[in-house]
Length: 353
Ligand code: GTQ
Ligand code: FE2
Image 1: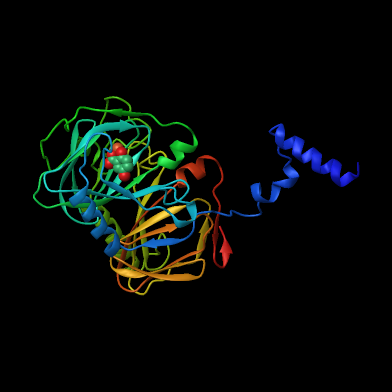
Image 2: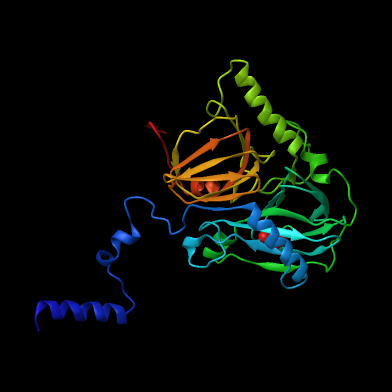
């Protein structure tokens, strides 16, 4: 038997024994830099919203399906309903007076509201109003149901860590009562009344869990924080981010850490004409344009975006954002996980950091 034949048999026997030699797979498994299957991609609200509305006419919300949520599947992920390898982003549509029943699951979720109002999401029995610009949290294992009190439909963006819980085989799911528990419609949730004043932490009570005890981050405060960052810059103070770019992270008032354990959530505001410094980061992210218009340049390809458009940014993709006019952007990412695993790395154009 010559050596080639002996080697061929060795590999066939490895295969039969369920063994895989590193030297045949190393470059794919341990590449020099991230080689994501996910691709940079943009979805436009002018396409997303009419399709969500059609689903509203044809598909009921109810037990089993649970939500009329339509995921934005990354074209690089082979038909999986994931926006990036770690993040689920979906448009959820609730028709006039509709109810999405109570349930809970291991996966953490948030809702970011592009437009409309009149839906309350009831989180562990606490009714939380949803309005344009608000970020609402549903931490893992919190019961939640949504109900629309109006005669108009409402649609919003959901973000969940469904892929992460899946890779880790950590998913649990339970139905709650068939209706939402509390149909009252307070403007302010109990969580905001306890935790929603800057710098004031309630004394006593149960120690908050890992994710934020505050369930709602209101646009009024986010907007004011961003406006003041740009105003301070106009008064001659250095920008904390970069010139013409204001940004805030939604944080847990009890710890100062990320609002959710598995996902980072941020709001960005670019002044008209601002172009961000190009950067690459380990970990993937999803952006939604909240207001204004501009462009993303992803690995050199430029896509124009406007209100409601959603953009997927894979790990280590080169990103530049250009503001054609005042430009407000919501962003979420898997950064808390990447950081906890000590895998974070950022490369800025014109230097390292
Ligand atoms: O609103 O509870 O987009 O459970 C996916 C799963 C939304 C929700 C989604 C969910 C929800
Ligand atoms: Fe849910």
